Image (cartoon, rainbow, N blue to C red):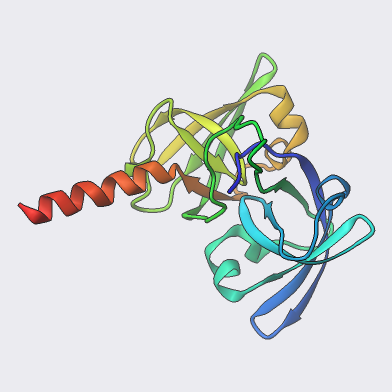
Length: 200
């Protein structure tokens, strides 16, 4: 589990393909500092398992399912990525509960600067808007953000200077793909309500 508070901007070092999957090497001195085999690290919001570390890099295996269902399918060496280690019992929950399970891939539609911050509108995959509410939480590329506005096709978030400087969203431009994870509570509520309706 994660909080959506990015700890470090890492860098993809290499991808070693084997069939449909790949071993991905990522540079991230902070997250590697205490990482060991089997630990979880979120890479652009995708929960991945560390298989080895070396110096300031870690290796993880990414399967076809993950490439197909997230924006990791388009990553390349040299690309910057958001990194966050899994929470511990002593971690402050600065964002919201994030699983690292991508629900869909969105597309940045526009970026509008204003007074040091930036409003970013992101197009949604079909059917996802029902999980998103104004002033609710959403995870974009592993970043816990507050929804400013939402409609059937898109939602908007406002990014403060710190987020623009310390995450990939400060660098991504319209047309770029982003991983989206909705608040897990919304999915549980939907399932429980549907079950209650079905029982009547």
